[in-house]
Length: 420
Ligand SMILES: [Fe+2]
Ligand SMILES: [Fe+2]
Image 1 (tube, rainbow, N blue to C red):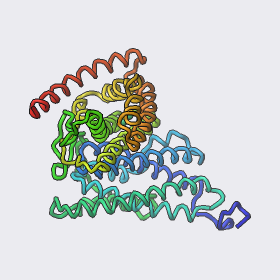
Image 2: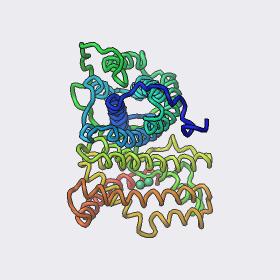
Image 3: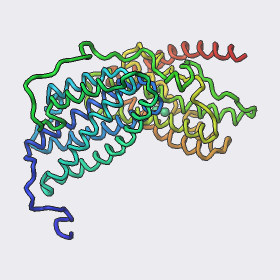
Image 4: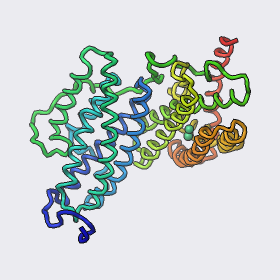
């Protein structure tokens, strides 16, 4: 159709007034923002490697959704003050109970079988029944959210079936799924338009606050034990360049532990501006992608990395620290530090010129680009978290690095002695 820029049904009356639209978008925002926080809180606690990776990608997509929804809400005669509010007590309870998921399967079912399918249904309905001219900016936004959700749900359903087949618990996640579905119904569904009962459900698990684990988990059934030492590959090649290349692949693969540290900061640091959480969601997903660089490079070489010991120092050694110290350690201590030569530039040049490995060279090229962004995030947010200028924050980073290397050196020494 040439007229109306191709917009269909231009005369149809829409189902959404400005006020109602702002109200439901505020609920969507709250749900994506809650799922971002819940997924971050669970990342170090969950066991399955592929589940961790999926959660990281999807929490980044949730953050992007929140970012767009926040803008659209304030375009609808709505003060940005509402962006701090929780729109519905029953929705809040749903999220508070979801974070108490007790297993990989329960969390996956809560996100990918209860909440996100309901989101997808409502977004499709919203997109098609809102007035197509007046609400085109919302329609465009929902279209991207629908694309993300469809991908997430296809993956999520496969993950749930995989976890169910492992059969780790007798009745699976059925009782938890029923409980969460009842809470969603009590909230009148995603957009609150379904009939609500004045009888509000009770808490089952959220009487106490969720606790981040002190040590990050790896699936003991499919992976090697966690360790604070670098353990490379089972049969290191004699050639020193090849050996250094494989070491590097493993160090990349082990970056999941850096993502888990960011997840802990994202979850536990309260009262920061929204942009902080959005930036950390991206930072977190970048570190998981770096882990995938290593996974892909190792698997392409036919190397079994999963049964090797799994390095978890970044999260575990820093877990007792306050979030500001954790983020300073990573973003200023490690990442800003890697901007000095040889650092990230040297890693890239090694893979390109010495090891002559095109795939790893490409990975390191982008790894370096990402780390430039992360060092900038560090200068922006570590100073905010600590409340001091960058000079003082760099002094903190030095102390944090000293403490970290002391712990890790001891573990490395033990590992080396075991090998000798
Ligand atoms: Fe990284
Ligand atoms: Fe990084």
